[in-house]
Length: 347
Image (cartoon, rainbow, N blue to C red; front, side, top):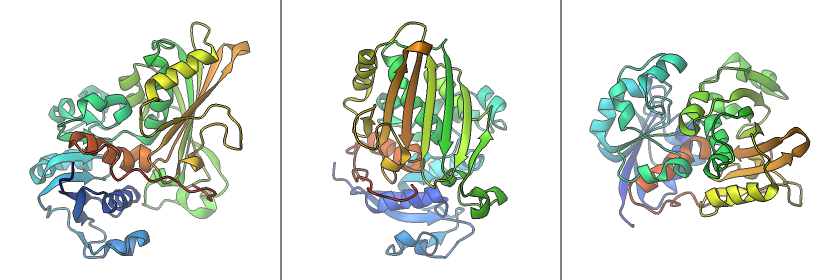
């Protein structure tokens, strides 16, 4: 499909907003007509995102939305639900990157967030992750990108459910390590270089909100911990899985090939040769690829499942573009086909 579509980005001055603008700038089917920011109104996009200095575009007030075919909203939690009517008035398709429409029931927002002011939209929203929800995305007019930690975890564990290795009542312990960009562009004491450099800091030992997505979309309750580590981009999930029956390496390869063999952005990396023997965020930095892998610990009846993504790409902006491509009938890989760099510094 060669049709040109107009696109806008609400919250374009944040890290994820910048990634959306970068991807839309290189997309063959999208023309960027607006990027909004209250803090940087009238400033050029390049003033905030130096990699986009070539764009002839200035930030505008989010209250003055232009009509577009697709509106991407990279807003803090709670903002999109307040303005969803305005967003849908401005665009035929809204792709929200906040947590506001990721879950399907109001009770989940009461439990995991601070409630929901327009729960009638929850049943209308489609979860953006194509590897999980591709069949429901075509024609969707409200799409909710998944959380990066949930995305990494779901991608690693989903093939085990597809293959019947897991059914949801097993013990699963998940440890996720994430880069500083997950905290967004707003400064805090914990995010200063002196405090952040060199850390492996547990910041959500229990009760992380992304557990709700894992429960909903895999039907699995996990023991979930997140660490902040000294990298900029990336989310790496290590899942310790204790299945009820013995599982062979052949079973595992069959499961991952069965789920992801035809997926354009998934790679299985499980103990081969070379330096990068298992998934690492460094190997996918700046791309929409997700890597998954595994190892078997027969003496403890344990499977160790690894997954790695770039939290701002596969875990956010790249996932949003991928889902929008499918929703609009475009080539699903359009604007996302680039590979990463090697060697590279901190991802």
